Length: 419
Image 1 (cartoon, rainbow, N blue to C red):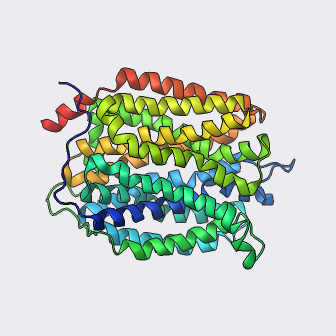
Image 2: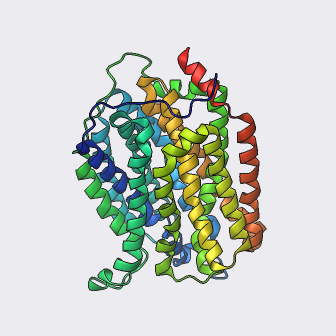
Image 3: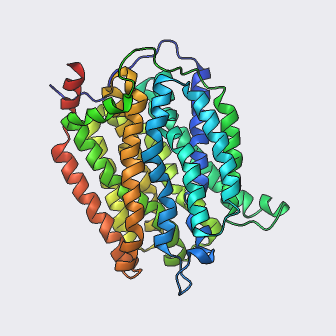
């Protein structure tokens, strides 16, 4: 059976209303994540509880704070997916989760100790993590699968806009009207965005739980998808690729600040180069999939991240490093977005949300958790030498790309779907 590039989903007379609302949903979903993830480590590095005896940023402790999202992604999405699949309308679950998350962020912004920040960020991510997969699921249920990239591109736009707004509008201007702007403000603004998202979620297309009877433990069926060889290979490689992604999130801000002497207010805008590229790649994604198929498209995504790590290891000139940051968008669109699209195609109708949640737990959960745990030890083992540090994930991506090309055969998943 020849490889099918994209399942031909059709949607009768889709108006502009659902598209606009789904686009705003994606914008807010990733703006919340995008305002704190690129710079929270620099804020933490200013706190004595997150510094080494020499006064340097403790990459191990910072990595553990970033680990709270992976931990939450392992524990929470199964519950979120199960609720949305069986009991509770997905848009209402989004609304409640975002309001609770905003309240928690306001508390975390006041915390200065390691354990108080760790517990606070864990609580926040426990309510935020399920919404990542559920926002995908809502989109898949109200918009054609092969047009998902056009909606998801607004998530990239949200990440970009909030990065520039925080770095230049807030830190350099608007924030001065209220107090002396500081990096901790990213948590306060993330809380405001969470409240806005919570209110807006109630206007999203109604996405009620499935009326089909079946196994009430839908996530077990989602885990059972690992019996399919193609899906299993994709999940395994996704796990290792997610390790690399988390190392990127934990290290890049310190690499730019300490290695390239970039000012703090520039860190967030500069890192949006990845999301700017990602936005264009999302728009191109349907065309690339139709021409190259899932296997080649995903492999290109992994290869792009490997090249990024090689460029970071070189570390100069600055324009080359910025090009490396842009490659993050190629990998995220061509690999991480595409694996969720492929999962939606092969998953049974009544467990689609749980299948998305399972894959999120493998990647954003287990993979990024391991990446968080490795960030400190790798940094220490390499003595803070960025050339050697980035050599580790560069080799990891190379191995992942080769293994994926050899082992991933999407027609196996499609044949299993047909049975």
